[in-house]
Each structure stands twice: as C-alpha cells, then as structure tokens.
Length: 320
Image 1 (cartoon, rainbow, N blue to C red):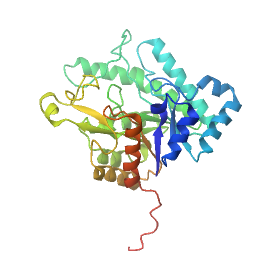
Image 2 (tube, rainbow, N blue to C red):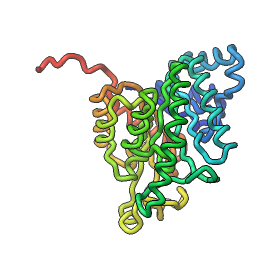
Image 3 (tube, rainbow, N blue to C red):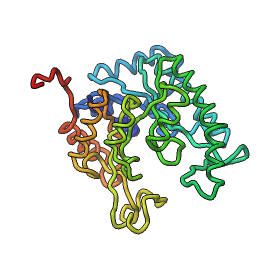
Image 4 (cartoon, one colour):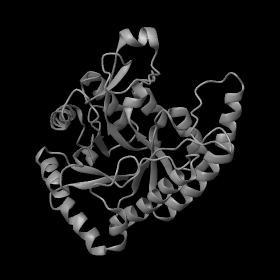
C-alpha cells in the first residue's frame, strides 16, 4: 500500500509548489480534483482535454517528483432535481472520465447523488426512515426511475473508457453505507465500486473493519480520514447532526485527522483487513480537521499512516 493525499487541501498553492511539498513528506500518490464540489484548482478540465502538451506537462510534474496519480475526483450530484446542477455535474464527470483515460488513470471518484421526491422536486430528498409509508414510496421511485437507469448508462460509458467509478459512501446521497453500495453495484455491474472513507461510517455507527470485510473486492480506492464522536452530545441528540462543522463543542461528531478520532490500533485493524481482502493500493489523506491547520493536520496524518501502513508483499507462509 502507498500513502497518498487528496490535493484539494492545497488548492491555494501553485500546483508544482504543492507537489514539491507533498513529495517532501514521503507521500507517494496524489488524488486530483477536477471540479464539482472539490473544485478544479490544479486540473483545468477543458484545457487538459484539448491540449496534449498540457497533459504531458501535468504527468511530468507529477512523475518527476516520484509521485503517481491515484484517481481523479469530481464528487457531485448528477441526480440533482435541479436540471442545471445535474447537467453540470454529469458533464464534469464525463469529462473527468475522458481525461482519466488520456492520463492512464483508471479510477474516478464521485458521489452516487440523490434525486428529489418525484418528477417535480427542486431539492434532493435523502430518505432515512421507513415510516410513514410516503418515504418508502419516495425511495422506490428514486431507485427505480432515477438511480439505477442513470448509473447503468454511466457505468457503460466509464467501462468504454477503461475507468472504474468509485463511490464515496456519504450520507445525503442514495449510496451511504455498505448495503446501498452493494445494491447499486449488483444492479449496474462491477464498473461501480467504493471509495472507502471510514469517517462517514464511524459516525453512522458502523464498524469500518467489518464493512471492509463485507465489501471485499468492491473497494477500489481508500480515503484516510477520521472522526471523533462526542459521547456526551450523541447520548442526548444521536448522530444525525445539522449544526455547522465549526460548532465543535456542540456537535455530535467532527472530522479529525488520522489517529485523532480513533487510536492507531483501529487504523491497523482497517489496514490489515484491507490487505486480507486483497486491497493493495492507496490510503489517500483527506484533511477536514477543524482543529488543525492544513499543514499540521496533513503531516500528522502522514506520520501516523507511516506507522501502520503495510508496504511489502506478505510472501510465503514459511511457518505453515
């Protein structure tokens, strides 16, 4: 496995300056944002699609520093009931898939998206309960009329370009846990897999180690991000929390850098299970820790991951 980083946290830095800094920490892979929610500070899609020289310059900038691109990321909501938003996010992902093929990158990261509650909706509607029965009716309509038909077509497009789509299981979208990821994968095929981010699973009450075991070969990319759960706040308010992320003391949970939400043994168990199910790719740091600067949060994540990452092939069992 290799340590990587989602470079959107260095969006204020010139691209090559950011790469110099990343390489200096011993990180080996970079995940690049191409638009939608992550923005495209370092990867201007249209110019790169049209200009072979620009693509060669990007590849040279990365590879000359001993780095490699783990994935292109364009997290969005292509199922948004606002057709303008949906169209923009759809077109950005299709462009991202085309660019990935040109760059020799075989993974594109996205969200599954979330439709509204029917054809006339204007805002997404994330269903979280089974009663009153209206909600199950909404959920059935979403999956039957929007989710499965749309992603069948998009999986076909991605496969034609030699790219796998990696969904980040995220509340607010139709794919938010192990069951919903596998449901969509069963419906549209194995071009769809997971960008496994344990932070969103921790706060929902899941055990990421067991999720890894269940997902197995469906894991195509991994984010390294942690969560700290406030037991006092969750004991009275539960884990569904709409307070702003800056309201750290009042929230039920907050994002933390690796090792500051859960101990390193928990992270060792996740890395070991990833190895056990055959995953041997990147642990890509995503830094959203409101208590640490970009530099400190990133470097602490790197230091902690270096303690727990498994780098070498296991080799033969000489003892058995």
